[in-house]
Image (cartoon, rainbow, N blue to C red; front, top):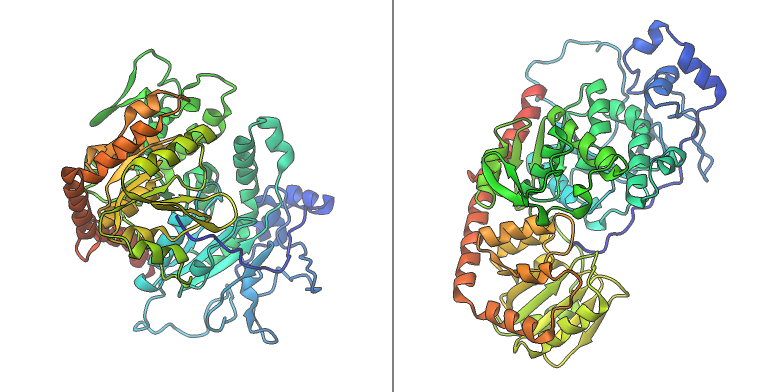
Length: 549
């Protein structure tokens, strides 16, 4: 689990709706101005209006400090009074949370001198644009890994009001841009009453407001996620910027949207399993139930899964927080078609500035392999009755336990043989402690990769979404065990005696511990110099370094 994020403060710039005058201009303008290159990295207003689906980007920006409007037809220079580059005031509500060095004037005019052929090529400029739908931790880690360690210039566009981890915001080589987009909620609410679908639709329809920002940044590539792949692939194609998708789940889970993109009715027959060429079949029971509903009103399929899955063929690659050994068969099967898949994990944490947490002292005092660690993530869906039976089962299992409950005010609660922690924890620091013997979790993919890196056996208890397929990977690699019968019972509560017995058996199973240590060795081999994950990283970097030389 990532530390509790802290929102980066930004001045309250906001973009404004396009007025009638600019709507007419956008419709009627046919002159060469609309076709010329962006001057100073900014589109002429009429072109910007057309690009942004009738949304003003830079018509004027207001702020509490009284910042005057920008002249879109002038190059951008450093603001001498504040030391902040004017290039950070992009034509939408933006705050440059970090700017290193001095910004020079940006101009589209030809240089006055012939460039020195011996000058070093400019480093790749990588833009990270997560949708804000889902956990951004994978993006934070990947962006930090691409910045100073690989000599890339990284701009992280944070679509408000989603918070950013304060430790990530302080990473060298990372510039944070907070963007407050105006949401087109009227259209979204007419599509579906489902809050998730409405949010996805709103986000996608608002993305066009970012077109001038992406143009002005002159990016080598954009990294985004599945939720906005369809819209962003069109925008990036218009701007001639390569788009890569960053996956936050297992490779196998991607196979399902791919099948849907080829045939939206693939789940309509009565077969219990879905056949996928080159890899084991997928039980329907492991696929989210909402995906299986064949209906024209199933907007999860029509508005989210199918269009975004079809857009994957237009991206330059998909990056996964996994490693070749862990999903070798699935990677081989899916890499037979485009786009290429890049297993670059397990992604490592960036430098943390947080202090010592009290429970770590308690944990460090416990013997090796004597503590059961329980964490069901930030979206716990376990019933109160099941929570009670789990607590009782931990008390009778015969081992110490550390149970993290993400919800609620941060606090510590000592028990006879355990401790309950409410609020966020640094999960890496927990899993590195030799006292941890087993990790009980719901199979969030990030947690599985962290367990594999440390060689901690997993007792998989998936709850929803991609977690069933993630649990398959745990079972297949022998990183741990999956009690399938607990899931097959539906809402039936698993009693304390059974929980205590299974936890105790897992803690004492030497074969499981040995297999988990093998996974640890393979994970570290993949991430070291010359390993499969580093080679995948190199292939991704070659896309940009070759074009910048």
